[in-house]
Amino acid sequence: MKNPSRLFPAALGAALTVLCLLASPVRAADGGLQSLRGAAIQAPETEAADPFKNMKDSTPIERNYVQQPPLIPHKVDGYTVTMKYNKCMDCHAWNRYKETGATKVSLTHFKTRDGQELSNISPRRYFCQQCHVPQVDAKPLVGNQFKPAQGMR
Amino acid sequence: MENDNKNAGKRGLTARAWAWLKGIGIVSALGLFAAGVIFWGGFNTVLELTNREAFCISCHEMKDNVYMEYQNTIHYSNRSGVRATCPDCHVPKEWVPKMIRKIQASNEVLHKILGSIDTPEKFNAKRLTLAEHEWERMKRTDSRECRNCHNFEYFDYGIQGRRASATHQAAFDKGQTCIDCHKGIAHKLPEVNQSIGAINEEGAPPQIFHPPTAADKKD
Image (cartoon, rainbow over all chains, first blue to last red; front, top):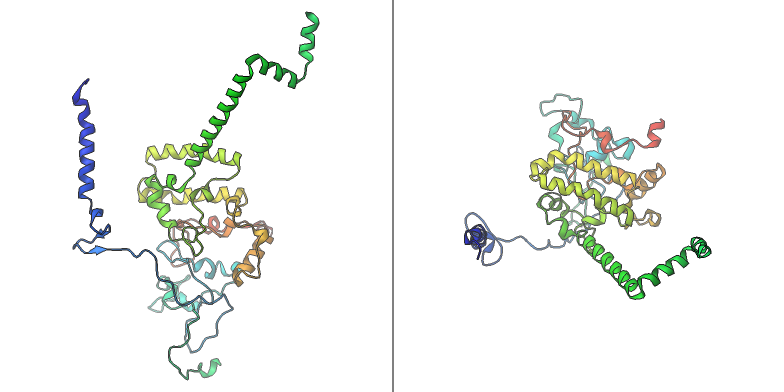
């Protein structure tokens, strides 16, 4: 053996690795993660299949009552609205709608909550799907006699 | 003697090759051939080892940033399980472009060593530049890597959705290619200055995201 002290760093490294592996929180009995309070966290492997299918892309859907936010007549899978990017505005913004042929955002959306008109879409309208929603082929759960408002038939 | 030399000079390439083969002996020639096969096979095997998803995400820069984002997209997981992994989009299939891309990748190894994008903050600061490189490459090759699977000559517009059918046909008429519209389909987009609220000074200008087409420029 040349010089045993040269092996020391390697031995230390190996020991640390073993220690880390032993102390690792991933090593819970069920193989999952643990919350800070010790409960097991298990991520679902796959999402359950959605029983409803998206409606096919269509032309704008008629409105049923006054002040109804127009429904989204197309699929929105994978269309994200994040802090940095709003996918809806990629087609529906005023500087995009002519090229894309989409419906442009209503002028009512330029107003702040205090009634002040802005020269651009108000940030409070950023989350489109708070009001505008896509449709699935779901039938009404109970029978009803709903009719669209008088002036909208 | 003099005459022989003259003839040797005039002999064809094939004849000279034969002469050389006889000179080194048939066994050595076969040995050289076998060595060539082994070298080429080994080269290709190593090259293909670096062309797998597992290799790409063996560096945390890729694993923690772009790979995480890609997991939410249709190219990672979908109903039929046909996937496009990292090299399917980012490494050309054709030999010469592949070699060029692989040589360029040595720059990426350098920046891995320098730690240029080793935190999410650093990565996001560079995201626009990195994305623009890929957009530019895709645009230059008419989105070659997309077309390895999505050959638009075989599109059935009757089955495509209403929007897809209309937009695809209009776009191809304008001479656009996949990447002109389909940016950010597998990874998060850099910040873009969209027309919402106050002007976003940090965002990329809209023309980077939607470059004007030749038809637009004429107007």
